[in-house]
Image (cartoon, rainbow, N blue to C red; front, side, top):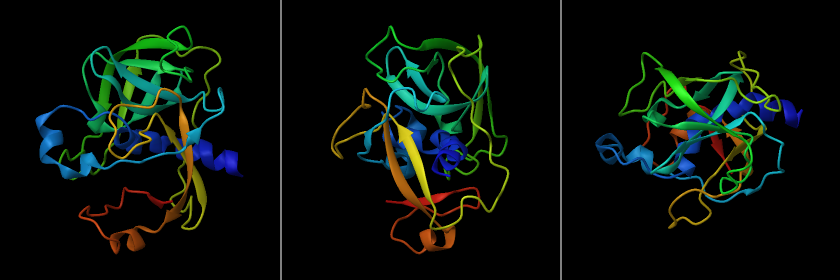
Length: 205
């Protein structure tokens, strides 16, 4: 059951992995305080366990975002991750090991038509790769059940996140952490300034 939850929930990478990685240097990011949130810590994932995970890399910025392969040449990520000249790095557990995995140029993007850059509502985007993913890559099975996962269920989030709240940049090795799903109503009652939208999936450690 845990594996099924992990595969179904890995689409969340496109929604949260930016918050665990380097900050985008744009005026929009500066005016939106929600984009400074961070997910901290986690443990090193087993090499090869998440072969659908995609690290979106830029030659100058480094790690930008995470995403999930949903087809041989399509990545699901967050709309706020859009940046020119990114590479989709697939099946590379350690970002420093450039001989591992495959880096594929991105030939196009399709953000959600109703994406709101300030509220981050409908924060979804498809990236289209120039070439298909390597044969050892796997694909996420998208979840069409609005009742799954239910509040209280345990799910796994992974990414190249920070391990120090005051640190900068991404972790070289892929990390994972288990979190509990909470209802959006309960999340709305918690402390913070983020308005919870119906498209969100709320979690806590």
